[in-house]
Image 1 (cartoon, rainbow, N blue to C red):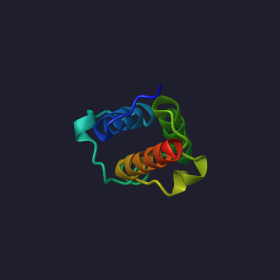
Image 2: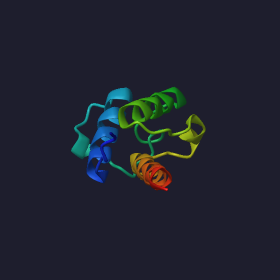
Image 3: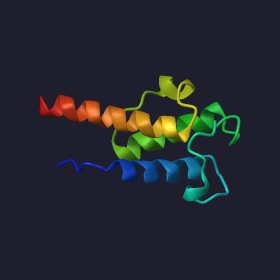
Image 4: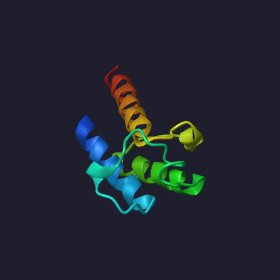
Length: 94
């Protein structure tokens, strides 16, 4: 039985993953959700791929690696996760 995660839980888990994988020395509340991860947090493509891999594993979703170039902020990643989960639930219900 799959547990539905709240949007807030998705946000918190994603923030923790980003902070851990990009080795940021900040608290989750200090992360600017709209900051560009590459320009502002000095992430590289490998770091972003690692973020997506952990998001996929920990949130049990399928966020394609090809989207790494399109998802430049934490906010964009969170919105995409919520969108994918909603689409998956709609498919599972149908």
